[in-house]
Amino acid sequence: MAKLTVYFKNKIILSYSFETERVHIGRDETNDLVIDSPVFAPAHAVIVMQGNSCIIKQLNDDFPLMLNGKSTKESKLQDGDTITVGQYVVVYSTDQTGQSANADKETTMTAANRKTKGVYIPHTANFQIISGANIGKIFHLNTPMTLLGDHGTGIVVISKRKGGYFASVLENIGIITLNKQPLADTSIKLNHQDVLVVGNITVQFYLQ
Image 1 (cartoon, rainbow, N blue to C red):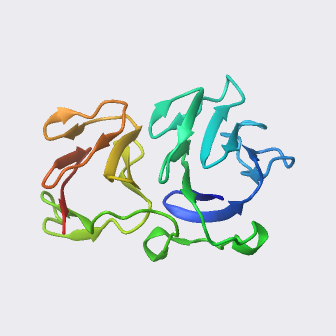
Image 2: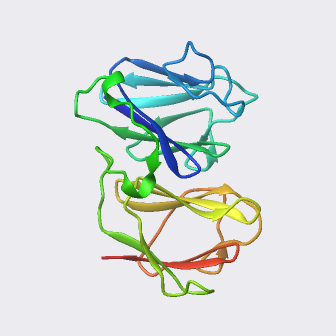
């Protein structure tokens, strides 16, 4: 069973579980997962379930499919993968609860209060701010997806997946570096004590 959780500006707006072999995503009402926004194509993407695996495919060449910060036409989905469209982030996870899509719809809530099922958490991870007015402040990475940065200065997505925490660029504006090296348009695993700079925010990643 596939579970798709939709975030907008770091807040959950929808969460559905699907048992069907195909899940269509887009803004048209005929889709299985409808996201009413012009940043989505009427038919944006489709997830095809093949046994124990899932494949996601792009359906409209005018609307790129961004998976974990990288453009793709077709790719195998893994637990914790993120699909980014504008300010929306769709998190894919496996769901063994057996609940129907209608029973699993959720109201808007902050990501910090969300307890997501089916996401593997290898460690307790944190960011500590190491520069600026909020130096020393710690925040926990306790959700499947965390956005770091702001529009106009750059945004990085931190996502939980099997094997660890991964950083990928969502909006590449301004200064974005990992350990003083530019963060490329790919997904990079974070290691203990890595230093990430996004605009005027500098944080250190660490595991407990």
